[in-house]
Image 1 (tube, rainbow, N blue to C red):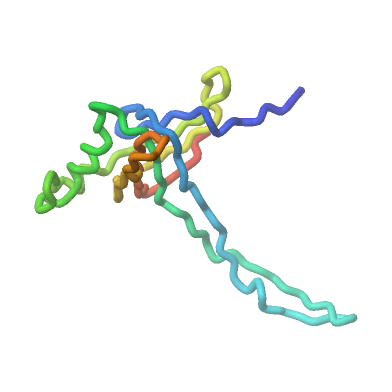
Image 2: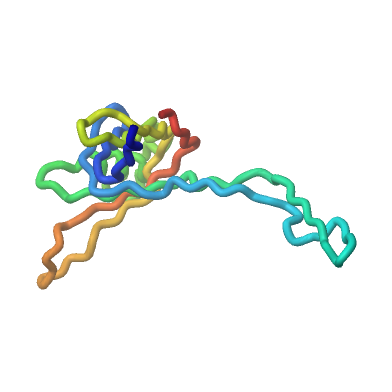
Length: 156
């Protein structure tokens, strides 16, 4: 039986119960921390040195970024972002605490079946940017949203 590899180009991003068409998703990153990796604990025959490492937890990047093509008339994610901005900011809604929402990224196989999914718990949009405007550019206009999640967990 052949092993089926998973493509990273077929996915769905859901935030607050709405599926958003996006170009890319990046940022899930967990790294183990180790202690004493460079400290010898014993020396033996033939100058053999023994080391022992121990786990000291892990570091996880709870921020992730999505990039989406700017679509005429569609500014749903921007409106979520603007609602959370301070009321003193032009267009800001001052509703930061209302902006915490669960999300999910689902990777699909070639037939559209779910093969991998990550639950994104209590996410908040923390930054927004738009691609450069350039009269000579052949690129489409892109928006980037950076999110912070309280927890990212692989559920499938």
